[in-house]
Length: 243
Ligand code: SF4
Ligand code: FES
Image (cartoon, rainbow, N blue to C red; front, side, top):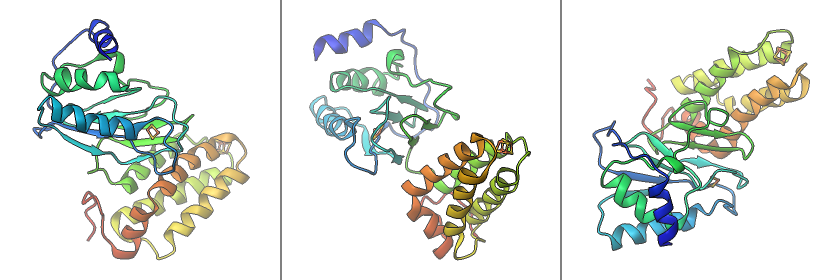
């Protein structure tokens, strides 16, 4: 335990982290919605609670909004929303170091820092394609808005050659925007599923299926959030300004 902790310190070039939120220190731990959680996030969560108490370090420790198939390659993930960063492949031996160095002193442990442009497409969101893992920085993120961001990102990349992608992805984009605004029809989630299926099955190349797949990952892991927006015209995260 001690040697692994020491390695992390020796392998790091410490720099002071910047508190970007003005909020109290918080650590969010991934927790896939489908068991078993291959990454061991549950063990890390319990370990953090134990170590924070043992070291008497005041920090909020919670499970993050995370959808994961359990096949994640870089987990367990931690996010530290007040510093705006993610750590990956965290082991129990790292926990006292994370608490003492990052939480107390704001120092970044670079060997643990999650910075992978092939896996993440936004700094406050992890999308690990290979493991089908999606994780938001903290629980205040609306996953419908997250889907909107992801579909907008992909819609701009469609070449427009075939109809299932050109029209299907754009219809999906419009539908998600209406869900965010609280203007979607009652069967919006079913319509989303049809469009996702169409993009995956009928498009000319693999692009549309891949774009639809990430939306399916968000929808299948956070379906209740979509349904509450549609049914109750309410955003559970309090992020959408639904009139
Ligand atoms: S599926 Fe491929 S070919 Fe069809 S519009 Fe999309 S990017 Fe173009
Ligand atoms: S549940 Fe932790 S990364 Fe998959």
